[in-house]
Image 1: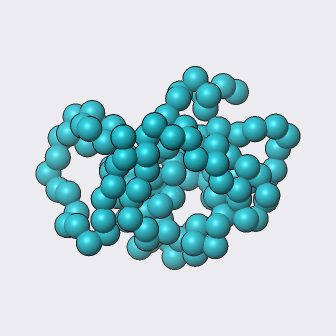
Image 2: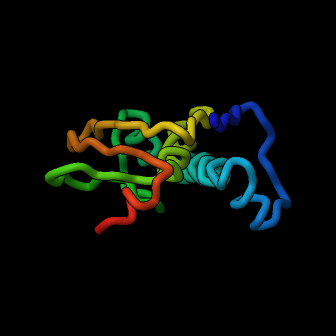
Length: 120
């Protein structure tokens, strides 16, 4: 299932916690909105994201240094990152998305499967 929200749409306001986190989008729009807000507050962080870096954010999935093996992160990170970059939210929750951090070269796989990203 694809979750899409355009930057041209008005910001959602007055939603309950359940509406933000338990709706059809499973909280991805809320994460994307946080990324949009963060881009207005931290222009340097937004620029890093626009340059392909995967900075450390509020969700697992950011990279501060390269490690051995695979790294997984939740789709929540990907949604926040898209918002930080000023992009439309566009995520297919049935698909994993692999990205490589332009700064560290670390590959990260973003997934909806918590069993993958919850491992230490």
